[in-house]
Length: 109
Image (cartoon, rainbow, N blue to C red; front, side, top):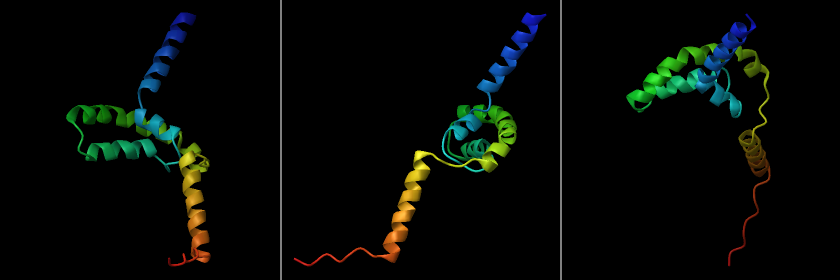
């Protein structure tokens, strides 16, 4: 009886891990907003990709939407601390400083 429960748990866990690839990949990067995996899948369907990839995306899309829905509270309240977001924030701060204090003019030779 215990083996049957463990094997079912392993099967369900395996299916969940193999499905919703777009959602998992989108959630490992920086903050992408809500439903990032579903958005990435729909963008891939609209792009110029081959039929094999599009068929896999179509199979994966319902699972991605479910996982994105489960992770919706996390997406709403998560803060972005990825390297990309920190660099973008630093660049915005530097541009704001340069707008207030323009760079000095170089003397002509």
